[in-house]
Length: 94
Picture 1 (cartoon, rainbow, N blue to C red):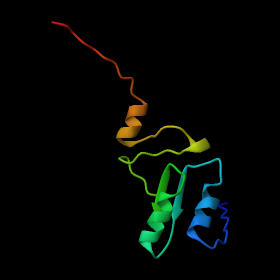
Picture 2 (picture 1 turned 180 degrees about the horizontal axis):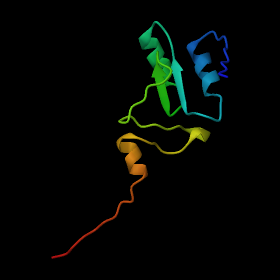
Picture 3 (picture 1 turned 135 degrees about the horizontal axis):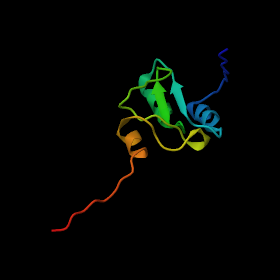
Picture 4 (picture 1 turned 90 degrees about the vertical axis):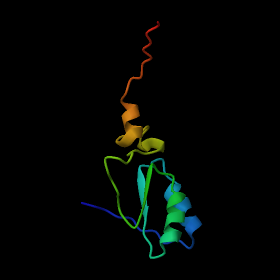
C-alpha cells in the first residue's frame, strides 16, 4: 500500500536540501497555509514538476516529465509534441 516518510526539519533551506538529496526528480509538492512561502520553496525543488497545496496537477496542455534519473524530455502539451515529431525541411525551388 501507500507509504509516506516524514522528516522533521528546522528551516525551508533544510527541507529543500533533504528533498533534493536524491537521484530522482519526477515531482514534488509543498503544502502550507502560507501560499507565497510554499511557492518559494516549491520553486527550489529539483524536479520536473512541482505543486503547491496539491499532490498533483495534470492536464493535457501541461508538460509532464522529470529530471535526474526520473526521465528525459516531456510528454503532453506543445513541449511533449515536439519530442515525438520528426522535423524535416521540404523546399521546392522556383
